[in-house]
Length: 72
Picture: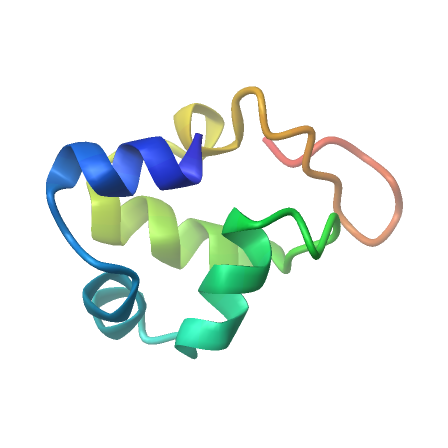
């Protein structure tokens, strides 16, 4: 869902990372499923940068926090 929301917004990974104030590599790892446990503050920053809710951002991603709970 993250990648589709980013593309719908018409912005690059670099631009979204800049807006969310996170490293582009972190964004790439999340988009490509290389991390299943993104930090909640990272996901909140991405949601704010995309102008969507955290729930919308994590929908269908199957993302979990470090304790194994679904990120919502």
